[in-house]
Length: 573
Image 1 (cartoon, one colour):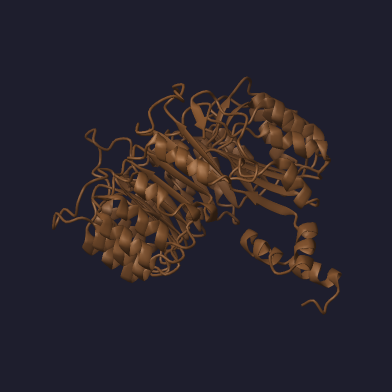
Image 2 (cartoon, one colour):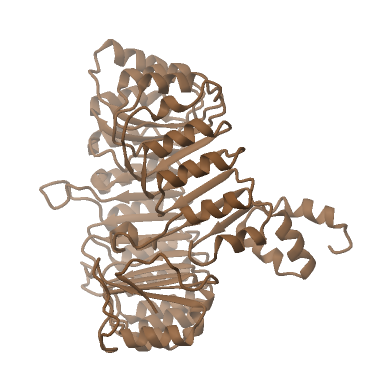
């Protein structure tokens, strides 16, 4: 391709959107590195401490879209102590100082402050998209700054954040000239919102395609909103409670019928099962349905709803659907590609029995296009996993969570090694795997030998010795993230192949057999790694004996060196 002028090559590069492919392009030759550097507009940083913001800006001067991730994944399970870090303000400040023309910012598991959001809103005149996922530290005051100052805002997406709601008037801060909104999601907010401001905003946003509401928006307001925006493709419903015989409910049914473009539904945080009939008219066109927070929908109503959703490709649901309900999914949703089954809070409290291996087998037999699975269940068998492996060889994400994490095969009382071994042998493109149930070192031997494309592995309560971890590190050449908790892996496993960590993004180990001495030896040997050890909000004693076991260790590759914002309970070696 060097026979072409640079301008032509840059145009070709513009069609390459994958971050991984762009990285590969930059390594071909010096000229391609220069051209890729000057033409890349979208950058993903998987760990905000792996590189400094100044270095990113210097490398990619035309940056317009930035995705940043902060805390380790296990923060989702409350394993990362409060105040650990992941602050976005230094990044926003650096971007503002260098006058980058930032248009999109996506943050995951980061600490976001109102000051940061205000600086963001003031500094980037063409800013269009803010996506916050599992973030904390900000309030609706910061959201008000975004609404008031980002005149070209197209997307404001707030997913599963911890937001302090100082007042419910932030929606009224959108100026009357704001007509550009395409996507608005405030489902995670707990406080009341200004319904009038919301309805006026929707009315003057003709391009609005995605709207997700919180639980304070009543059915009557939902009906008026849908009257203003029948073009919606994605709708998140907060409250769905009303008398099915009322005039408001009848008007809603008549309005929903006119929403011909709707393909995605979510929410239903508060719901009366008898009201669900109102959404039946749009079910036949749905390709995505997220009921993972709809605890008020019982199994019978759930099954009635699913039977009308024959085009579903993505389904998130609670395990109250039961094995029988999953059988209905399997017979109805032949195009299903992604399934997530979450545990019900009623499990173990005289609630429903949840799901088991029977439901998963039914899904694998009926939904052969399945390629992504998250499955919380009561039990699992080797035979079921072998069947799933045979029926769904195209699976790229397989996450199994048995609620009793050390439970063996209930039929044979054997470990689940052979079942997971079948998964990694049959699913050649598997990139993400989470293990559960009683497991020995044999399963890690299978993973090391067969999981050639594996990038992320999560392990809990598994293994017998250091050999298990060694099998994985030696065999999985493309492994980027390894997460381990409550497993018997210690210093030999950690130190045997230290060079491997420079090819990975991160390693997490908690409640394992790793010692402070081993962590020190690793940090001294591998200078481009940050090795952090910490306890739960307790100041680390740096003078302790090297033989003491580490409660939690987080290791990651970095070009920025030691971070300077660590709290006193985090010891960076």
